[in-house]
Image 1 (cartoon, one colour):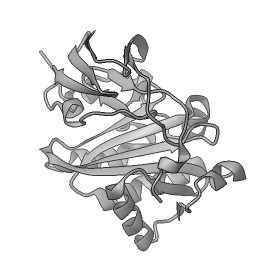
Image 2: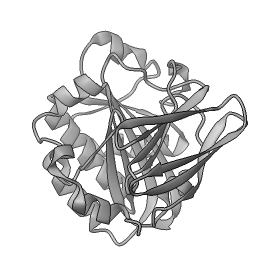
Image 3: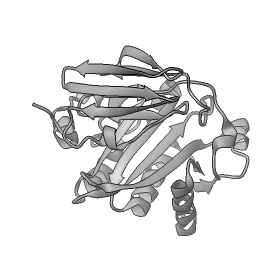
Length: 255
């Protein structure tokens, strides 16, 4: 028996719930939080998320884009004059060096209609965004009949890397615990088994993707291939995280 995203969060325990007032400490400890959202309303959803982040973290959010679709959405958000939102300059290093505020990187891409939902990753830990700070927003997202846009928002502490260059390996964790690695420098495959299902990972020509998955909606499969440091493939129902670690390459940012 497999669980979909909604079933997974229904049974997720309070031990991984996100405290409403602890975002700043969580970000300091983990260096990075990453939201993955499937929605049919990308602009209002992202406006509300960024506003909530600004309030919870006690300052404005400086936004950069990770791809072309993210750049278009970033510009629309700037036009809405979202409270607390700063649109990133051409030089994203200035915010890191200034020692103030929060840096966030936005990616967006259209996808085939799939189940709406929101996943929050803190470090390698899957959190439940339906509890605590983002409960109201999560309720609205899960109330949508479907999602046709995938949003990625990577929120960094000032000490962490912004975006990555080509990676050399993928690190796999299950339920927050290390499972193994798969080299991106040579072709290979890996079967990842958890208590909640199984995933087949394939590495070819410096990129990795989930070719098969036991989850119902197969959002991890629809994610496609990744190859840059900082990119991730998430499967919340099976509690599997695939991440490419590595050094930063700031000039990969659009914005």
